[in-house]
Image (cartoon, rainbow, N blue to C red; front, side, top):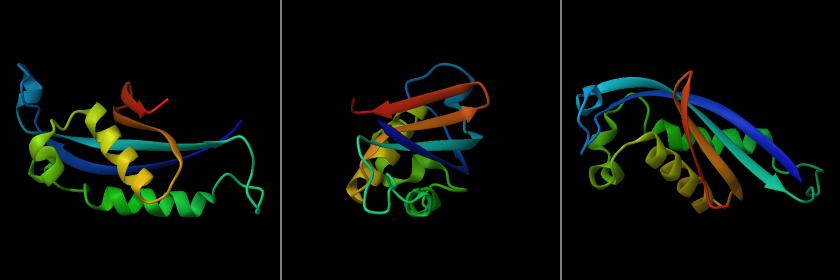
Length: 119
């Protein structure tokens, strides 16, 4: 099995609903996003996917989140903007662009992350 991974970053604010504690207040993170794609075999170029293509598609998604309050974005007005749900949001958007994404990991700090995968 082959796996490639790209990493990108964005900054945004959010507040958690149905949560008692500091995170129920608006606060910000410098999010790190890891997107991985796996394949049993390589394509014509002997790659899983071109790093450049994957990073470009990931950055287009992140552009919509960067320097925003996530709670103001349509999807997150209905879905709590937790790290877990941010990972699923990015995963689904990559998948809808035709990327055979394996997993998306969202780091909200150097020591805390959440991963979404359908496997």
